[in-house]
Image (tube, rainbow over all chains, first blue to last red; front, side):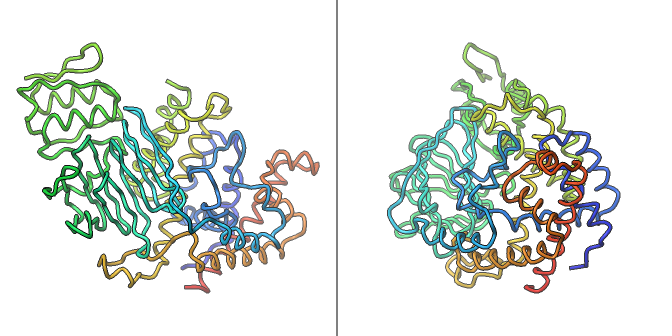
Length: 313
Length: 178
């Protein structure tokens, strides 16, 4: 690693300090952007300040909160009051880890989203579960390596731990994973699992079906048959960043995904339920734009009705 | 639509420019902007965001925190050894155990902290005291300025010196432990 330059570091740390204030204005951030654009070294030095600052964070497992960014208002809650006087802090750090409940049974907490709502659950460090609209999931907050998907869609980004695989249960079906990114959809009894990175195994003790990156497994709970088809890994979990990508999906599936994202009701005429659609729809521009885009790309008609939309030939 | 989300839409191009300057990648900037949107939307639903005095600053701060979380994870991944015990899953370059309760990680955190503390101890008493009040006790810069009866820019200077010292300490620590 190349050495840091004192003058640039002084400028970078002054920026750091100024932007740490709640009253930092948009123009301050813009001026900072201008400074960053002057020289790549500026950004590198600022990153060094950020990394130095991290050292004083408490490990996130001690926080009850999800690891979303600190709220500048109302209170700076990443600076706990108990952290007074460093000499004892390190000892406290260790003591609290040993007191942390590691053994004992799972403690499932229920998380729900309404249709059109999305939510993220952060576990430990680096493990994140993103919930799409209309989802119900139980997550073990004690062991943090187990979840039960009751309905809806979740994108799992799992921090690797080979000794403690992450398990997603769909009633009796078990998806076992050791550090990957994968998306699970459950519509009553039908489910699908798409893997973007790593590997997921369905029912290791019986089916032992391996789902590799770029693959999607579709199955029905309680039935032993399932299908594995190719799936674009970069499209996985696209809903979480406002992009729904479809590759030869039935229109009824497309409608379901749109319902989840917008919280609206989309009726699909029988004639076009099985129509295959390939394309990407943006969520960020709103419901109407997405439906119009779908209509334009697929050739169906999208009409606004009382409680939502109707797709017809 | 809420003030916060409206402000977000107005700020979006500036956010993208800022994040591109920080990450060097417009694609990554776009991803972070999306994450920021989701976080703001989520916060919006859960808390009283009506009393945020500086929504623009809040939004930039949220984006910056997303970025820092990523930076932190990337740094951890780069330092991690390949975990050979995951032969069962056979993925090349699989990240190793990063469970926060891993004793090795606790030890490294403790050492990093000690290293930083030693660097702070070499600074003038007042500088390190102001830093600790700010960073560990959560005092605001403006409050410290009034309490100590010095200007805000004097407080800034003290903090800047402290942060420069710990940035150097962190780099030395990483250098020694590579």
